[in-house]
Image 1 (tube, protein in one colour):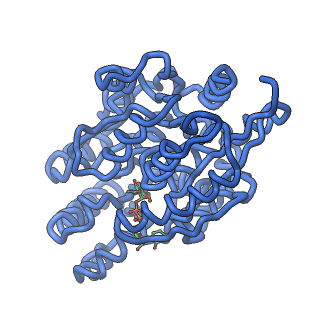
Image 2 (tube, rainbow, N blue to C red):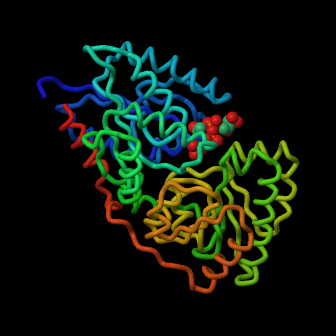
Length: 380
Ligand code: UD1
């Protein structure tokens, strides 16, 4: 490398931040060869969905904040594109790194693929590439496919991702099986997580509560599925109390879910569940502490399925499709959809100690970011 390379990492939504943090640390170690700039699109703007993560993950404030905010998919994506194009034209980065599968990811990779400088487009590196749910009704699946097709470096978290990309005709040379940087964060912040006071704050006892998170549009944006989820909670709450009179169900509620529950007039049913504790979205450290301390997690998040596998915590996933097969085949995850009887059967297994224990996949070793930054070095 004959001159320092300028790399922009662009993040926007909650699941991006813990994937960026270990990469930012790794770039800091290579200051002599890289100038690393963080751009935040502003897709998520609430303190609890955004700033708290920068604080928890000891990340510097983003150098550039686009303030894109919420809106329809087209509005949000377009606003991010407009803002990011100006940044790219001014900064002239040598590479842009995008994360995961949110609207910020697709918007910024599209911008780079249409700008020409130094005789070519701006290379995009995609962290968490290759995952496929094969469900095109998920906005994330569209974001993944488009981003991968535009990327020059594809950093894949598990083997199935490599297979997916090869099937789509991606050149093998662009693909790097690195593992997930989100797990690097879990490894790095272990002691900080242990020091979190969230259990005390919420009056929760170790291993006596079920943690739940729901926010997928398919689950919360229509009355019927949100209603089904509430009835699953009602049933689980009764079951948990049968095993332990102290037990609780803890739901850090996503703003989308809260808004939809209000719209459908379903909040009352949530509040009527005796041992359900509705809490605000938790920051990174507190959320992982809740995950470590819970009996099991019920979720429709992608990342939590991996985090639960790494922590060997039972995870029941409220989705029909999946894109992280290792968590099911090797890890602690079970795909349940909104099938109440399956969820209750699995919960019974967990309460009676018969649920699978799971193993930790090989690449969950805390070194994904090192592998990624090394690949970026080799690229230049
Ligand atoms: C987005 C991602 C999803 C990811 C999730 C994590 C896309 C297409 N979806 O979904 O993959 O799992 O983030 O949270 O990119 N809102 C706030 N405050 C905020 C942000 C949003 O109140 O800081 C509310 C707004 O009413 C907004 C709604 O939440 O309309 C949805 O936000 P949006 O960013 O569109 O999608 P998420 O559901 O958060």
